[in-house]
Image (tube, rainbow, N blue to C red):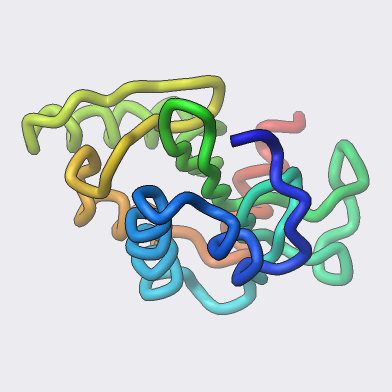
Length: 147
């Protein structure tokens, strides 16, 4: 799928092929069920995005809201962007261990995990990671990477 031009999350989901829609809806629900208060669900960068609004944190390197999680349908797979793992080597290693413990292969793209269905992911570990950082904690971790 080419970058979406959808203006809302519902519009994004509705434009997906039916065989992709169920998986994205399930992962979206996992995110929403575990997302700490303070993040906002939007469409940014042509995908579903969970971010810290500029009103809360305007000091980003690109003057865009700070992304915590992204969820995207690409041509041959789906992609889950877990920025807390991407910006912290220890968190990424922990996530790799969780994949291994659950006998799942962690297929990494550029700053994302590639998957076909929810069964490709260690859902409990993903949920734990989503719930791990409040917006303030994520901002603090982000600022550490910018030093």
